[in-house]
Length: 425
Image (tube, rainbow, N blue to C red; front, side):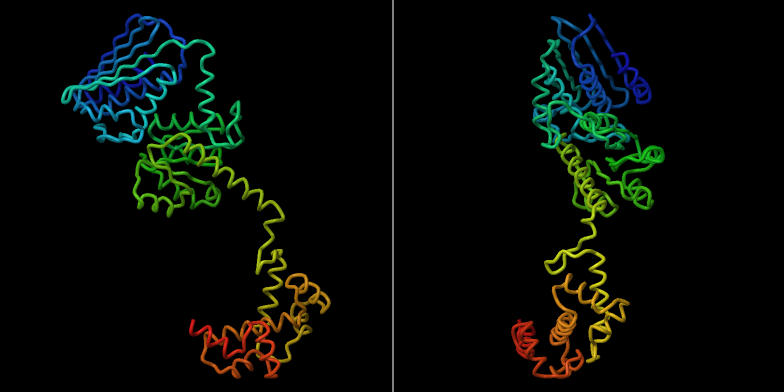
């Protein structure tokens, strides 16, 4: 309690708040220290956010019947009956904080309530409008070995890829950039069993950390002092060394324009506050899996394969095919175009040309030249007003009957009917 109070004494002086602490019959309690500290931190932080200048915050701590009791009363506007019924709803946000730079995210009180219940206790609220708000916390001592059931429930809430008897921390580093301490700690507690976590309070501090140790993923708030989340992303994406790092924005801004702006600046994903822990876990896990698969793909021979017209083609073969097509198109009107001239232009033998084209396209060089000519004819029929005869000669055909027969074989109808069908449909 002394440690927590010390963290707020300067704020109390700056805002002229009378900060009173009473401790009675304090000894020891068997409980989860981390969870209890979060409960007290969140409630005192909440009190400071809504206490006006020259107001008061009265904290009383005592133990009785082996139980731990805590009340925190602060002066201020107070709450209505409806507000008191919704105060612990993590998805309900009330009035703005009266402290400059602070803002309610709807997470703190909901988290405190959940942690109190996890410890077997409870939090109650009462208020008198225009006078005060008071929270009362009751925490019973834990019995050794009674924490198994909550742990099992927590495991069931995890993504399938993370669910297991014991969390195993993976060799994946995540940098959390968040100026609000409670949210930063919440994110750390959600993710630290599974990933290596580092923290920064704003964009400037984040960039300093990245210079020393580059993270695999960055989770960043948008509204921060010194350098906000948008400025941080702009800096990262403009640097070739860091442009590849995926960034998840977490923000209380919920409009479509805010989402679009984040994506335009280079965010990979966007989570709105207040958030559910499972939402964060699943989002991060999916991002990790996606980037792992991409890394494996580009390090494998599969990345050299493209699919064209239903055929899987190696990139080198696709480059070769495009070179053949380019040469044919440049010499489309040359009726003497043949496999020999193509092989000579590409600097390979006729046998190599035959073998590679047959493997890639399933056609001989002569068949492939004809198919490219006919594709050219089909495009000209639809996109120009040239006569069929003019198009025939432009595509390198000189034998009219041969031309009509081969066109009908490839497209299912004579050139004139093909043109009519395409231009009237």
